[in-house]
Image (tube, rainbow, N blue to C red; front, side, top):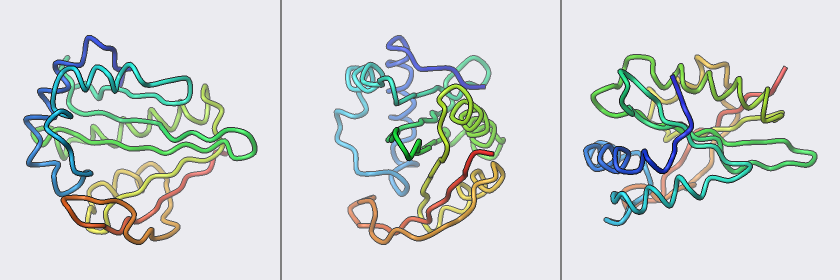
Length: 163
C-alpha cells in the first residue's frame, strides 16, 4: 500500500532513513548528516510539487520505505522517473513490487504520462527484479551515472511505455 507523504511523516521517515543508513550506503548517493534529520525530510516532502510525487510504502501502519515519481517532463515527452527503497527489515516481501505497480497505474492514468524510466546499479539484482515484474524492459547502460558511496557508478536503465 502506498500513500502520499505529508509533513507529519517527516520524523518517522528521518528515523527510518537513520536506521537504514548503513544498509542504503552501497545503493544511494552520498548523504550529509542533515539528510537524516526531521527538518530535512520535512523540506523534501514539502518540496514535492505539481509534477513530483513522493509516497510512503506502508506496511502494518508504519512507513517501510518510499517510492517516488519525479523528473517529470511534459510536452511531447510525457516522461517520469521512478525510484524506490524499502527498509532492510521489510525487504523480500514484495512491497517494492506492489508500490511500483501502484505508481505505474497512477503515472499512466491520473498523471497522464506516456513513458516511465528507472535505473539501478548494475549489481542490484533485487531492484531489477522489481522493475521486470512490473513490465519494465532493460534498454541501456548509463556509465558513471551517479556518485554512490564515493564512486561514480554505472546504472542499468529500464523503461516502460504506456499501452
